View: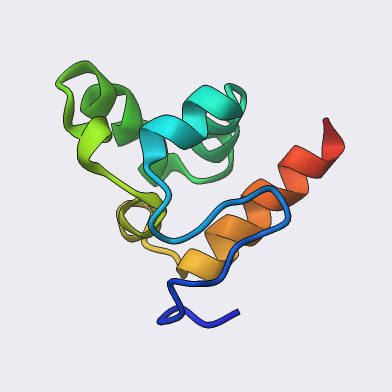
Length: 83
């Protein structure tokens, strides 16, 4: 999985350009999960409240959490597989 490879798609269909809003609508538990794992994601509540979350994608989320996008996708994919 390469960070520059925007074609990459995880088993659950998550891509670097997947809109964050769509991701959290499809997997409602993911937002709380990533917040619990990385405190930097606490900003998501504020971003959702002021509408900025709608402009973000998975790559932006990784930047917000200051982590590699591949790690974020892997982490979310692991959580999804537990459901």
